[in-house]
Image 1 (spheres, rainbow, N blue to C red):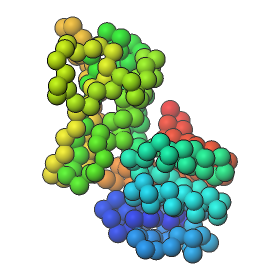
Image 2: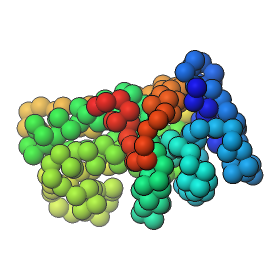
Image 3: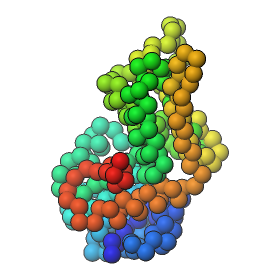
Image 4: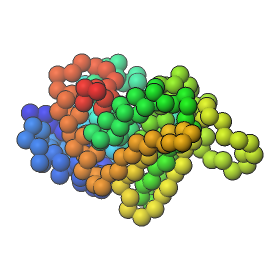
Length: 243
């Protein structure tokens, strides 16, 4: 049975992950850690780490896993290019599931977005609106950026070149080649994302709303179980769910 280490265990997401593990008879809770605890001292107590902390902490945990030959599931967002490269490098040596959102519903939505973009994207103005609780520090969310990336790739565009994150000061008509992002922060919103394809006379919207952190926790635990006996590599939730 897969033994899981939960880092950031005292946080809201950490507590939810522990609850999910305890409800799943295919995995077991190996060890819990929070700030100040040394993951390298307990590598004999787990097979895989689930991490939803902060980029700098995640990279430290990633290095421990690499040195110990352990797997890791990363749900942390907000990495810069250096951090992303470190994750890619580690995946050459250990199995890594890295996804900005572990929700089954969100990952199904990504599949639908790819289909929608290929069918109607060239004829639509595309806008992405996301909302999260007041404590979330990165914006736009990693999920919103992933949605934008999926749409851009389907249309043969580079998101870094076509993304618009604010329209203040833009004094010209909307460029259809761009993808717009809007961010809302407030209250206790777990996570809401809507991608709208605006066409002449009609609009298509693909929306996902999370009402509980358990949806992310269950996805991460599912990914941990899936990693059993997997070879080194960088995997996504699309791989886990066979999408």
